[in-house]
Length: 156
Image 1 (cartoon, rainbow, N blue to C red):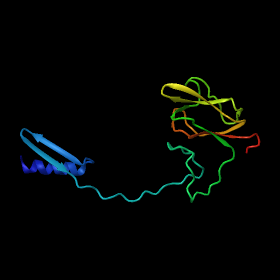
Image 2: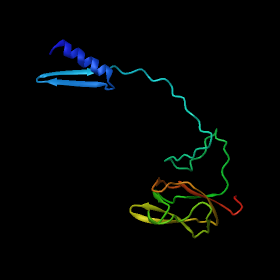
Image 3: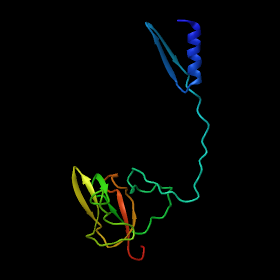
Image 4: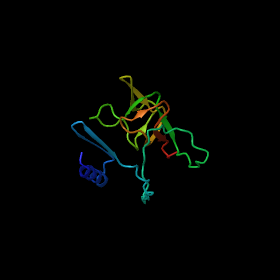
């Protein structure tokens, strides 16, 4: 293999975003690889001026850390009775069982948890007003995951 061709391949690799290149011609095989690049400088984040609602895959009912002094929101939580998948409506083309602001009683079905291909209705278990829906449709949930927050009519 001609040295000029090898130098040209090296220059091509260096100029590209590739990290590794293998060149084969007949029985000849050439392996070229760049050294690892130095770490990039830190990225400065832009903080939005309005609150951002975030969803996490972890259960919402983990105990607060010792340094967490945020107040518990008023109301009671409807939690998942089992491991499964949360659904807020009986079918994709049907309306949700409940929405924020709806009044519920202890027998109101608020969602379905699918477990092992069985659809299990979850009832509110209390009287009040739906203050917050904490789970996303088709979200995997664990036993005890907070699904909804329900307050009494005065917001407590």
